[in-house]
Image 1 (tube, rainbow, N blue to C red):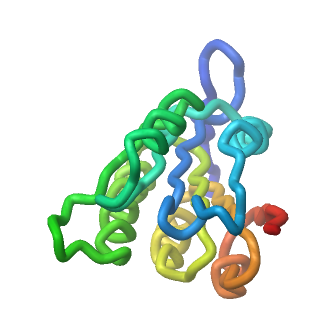
Image 2: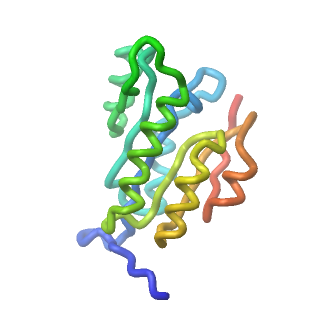
Length: 156
């Protein structure tokens, strides 16, 4: 089977979609630098989709910081009873859209937990290269083993 890469016409690099599990990795204990994250992801290709998923408790200041660093802030859909898993479902749904988007070559998931394992598996089934970026404690071994590429960031 030949996998055709849809490279960016200007740069010739693969097109990348990045999905960040905000409640899981944007915490004081990890001090995630979105500028550095973007630079690491750009080593794989051109970021065409860059989304950070947040719950309803995200502050305006956090949302502004995310947007100023070149990402789209996506707020969870639930109301008062929203749980972290609702953010995961919203993020998974968006990531699956990229799996079926022929112009995206590489799917990058930034998280620590195995909730996104089905997305990684489906992306690989459809010929997408997969990258998982996370940190300890709690960086899922199953997720690391499923991805084509793993980047482990340093926590505190």
